[in-house]
Image 1: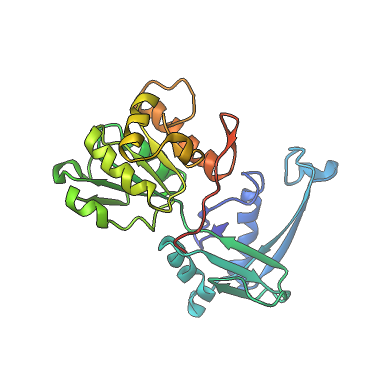
Image 2: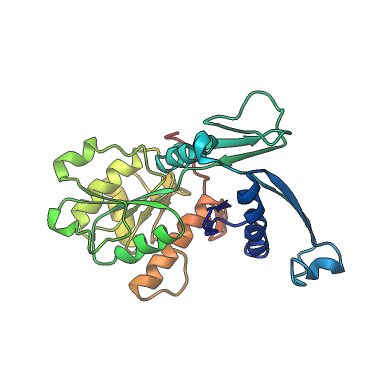
Length: 284
């Protein structure tokens, strides 16, 4: 959880139970420029003080670490920049509360706390069709990075896709050379059979572990047959018809079902009695 000197914050310690009290403790840290350790004991009836009788039944020790601007925040802001650029980072805190940031875990184990901070999940949407904006909106609000590609320049309208991080013009002749290594998942949403087939052919040959395909299973099987493969050969990696069965009807509901399915596969949850593969850090 990151707290600014204006006492706004991002991130959570406890799903919302302790954040208000934590921010109040930060006032003293900003005044004294000194690290502080606080303890929340929610195991007994005294839970009323901080947990307001929430019954969380646990104990949490929190380090409030001062990150002075004069010391360049001990590299913390640079770490966030690296994460945003797609590079995983490891934050380590030693017994004296000193902070170390690196791309890989330090070889020694002289740390009381280590946390791997992963780069945002990067979603590729193939096709700038009218039903794509709700997908990009939901993905954005859960912290993903989103790239939308299309072969039509006029379709890549920033006003239509305000939540997309990238709108990329990729003509048919350029698709075979398009770099797919930065992406964790991909959705094919062009609604054009020939275009979908070309997208699918390249995605199958990539290392992307989630490929979502709109349309009924009959269309899916025909596309796969054109690509020289079958659904069983890609089971656990190719998902079509795309999305969890939520009874969705509107574009927004369909978008929710799509993003929910990607999240489930990402976290190795069962889908239709099958377990999707976990995402590999193929680009990092």
